[in-house]
Structures are given as C-alpha cells and as structure tokens.
Length: 380
Image (cartoon, rainbow, N blue to C red; front, side, top):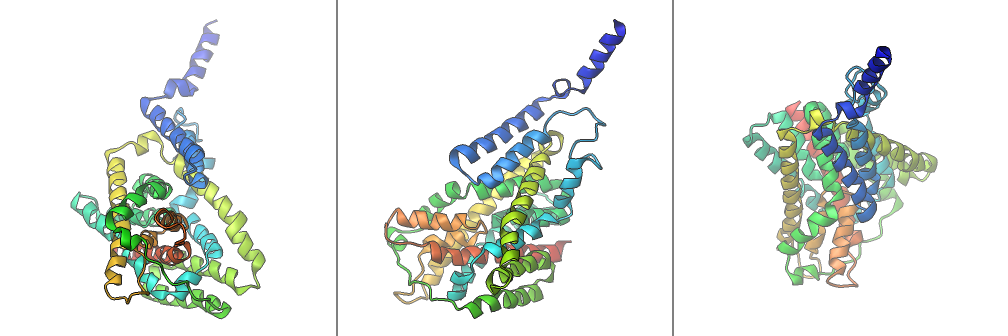
C-alpha cells in the first residue's frame, strides 16, 4: 500500500497541476486571447494562432529534467527553436515575401521609396529612448526594430544583438503587426485634414517586364553595397523577387511563396510562442519592451504621414501624394497598405489608394532590412 501511495505521489509531482504557478496560468490565458483575436477579429490569424498556441505549449508546467521544454538543450522544441535563435527562419520568410511581392508601384514612382525610408525614423527614435532608459546599445537596437512592424527582421536582429530579450521582442513585433488596423487609422486621421484625405493621385504607369527583372538585381547591389550586414535578409528578398519576375522559374517562385513560407511561418510562430515561458518572459524588461515597441510603431506611422505632407510642399498641384499612404511605410505587407485603402475609401468611395500605398509598403520592407543591417553593423 505504501508503495502504491509513493507511486501516486511521484506521479502527482510530475503533473502540470503540481508544478503550475499563477504565471503559467497568466501566460496560457494570454495565448488564448491571441487565438481569440485571430479567430473572432481575424487579426493576422496566420501569425496569432501559431503564436497563441505556442504560448499555451510553452507554459504547460513541467517537472525539471523531463527534457521536453523549449529551453532544455536537445529537446524537440529546442531543436526547432534553433531556427529562431540562429536566425535561419527570417531569411526564408524574406525569400517568400520577395516571391509574392510586386514592386511595380515602387518602380513606377521611385519617390515613394522616401516614404518607406521616413517611416524607419521610429526605429531610431525607439533606439535612442531605450538607451536613455538604461538598455545596453545592442538591446536598444533590437528593441527599436519593432517600429518597422516586421517580425522576421526583429527576430533576425534580436538573435544577434539581444538573444535574451528575443521572446519579448518577437511577441511585441508580431503583436503590433496584427494590430495595424487598430493602431494606425486614429493616427492617420489626427495628422491629416479632410482636404488632404481627398487627394487623388495619378494612376501608376505601366512597368515593363525588363524593369521588373532588373529591379531585384540593381536593388540588391545598391542596398548591400551600402549595408553589407543586411545581406541575409536583402539577398533572399531580392532573390525571391527575381524568381517571380524572371518568368522561367515559376515552380521555384510558387514553392517559395507557398509551401515554404507557410511551413516557416508555422515553425516561427509556434516556437516564438513557446519561448514565452513564464519564468523567462514575465519580467519588467518585457513590459518596457512592449511599451517601447508601441512608441516606436506610433512614431514610425506618424513619420510616414508627416513626411508625405512635407513632400507635398514641393510638389505641383496634380502631382501631390495623399498623406493617407504615409502609414504604409512600415513593413507590415500588405496590411498597412490595406489600411491606407480603407481609410481613404471612408472619405471617398471612389478614391482607391491601395496600388499607390503598395509602393511605400514594399519600400518599408527594404527600409527595415537596411535599418537592421545598419544597427547590426554598428552594434554587433
């Protein structure tokens, strides 16, 4: 009888019930909230469902030494997490983004590149504020990149500059990507007048096939000669786009933008979610990172809108840019461009801004990768 009781006692000690703390329960609840937002609100479900479920998995209370947790060397989750820790997943995501992105809007109106560049101001503003709050320069750089609204870039940079903060940075970046339709419209309305919101832009010119083929090659050479440290992201982005635009590698392009990016999205979302293990994640720094990420994202959106207003001071009537596309300078493709379209339509049902907004939107992808390369080059 004593042996049976001892066995039952030992069994109980291995269960999650015996090892649970309020922190585990809190993180599991947050994971359920993420899943609920994805299903009910349809906010970035391809990201929030894997991340939310990963949060639940990562916070199942475990008995020490079972070798199944994400931070236990050699466990299955730990092996999958290597793609995040070592930075393997983000370049593969960028390959898929390149293979599904049409740069025609940017090629037809190159000055839209400046809007994407202006939106990166949020990254460097958050970097400066993080430094003033006492974060190390490398950690401040990794936190600042959240303002680019680019989860893969945030993971890539934090894996090299601040691996101990990677979980909080990644969750913050993906959270703000999902909240683009909620955060950006009030800022856009606050910073623009009704007259500005009604500006109609000229239709983009038709871009030739040759221009589309040359663009990724020229883009790669220009950006990586300036910022060689951005090569892993920029190289894969432009390579994926060349696969798409060449017209002779359709199977490779479809694989890159389809099955490959889907598989990597599942793995990156699930493992990032798992990395929010309560004892590692629930710290004061995590709260500060969330706050700084929000500030960075707000500044980036505001900088994009205000820069368009500044550009319009020098543009003739008929060539002016609708400042509602300034928000799309952040790297949340194509969600921020959709926000530009939806806000514009709410003031004029016939004024479609989507194609114009895609120019600064894809410029933001390039800009965030360049910004990451700059920070990596100076801080690593």
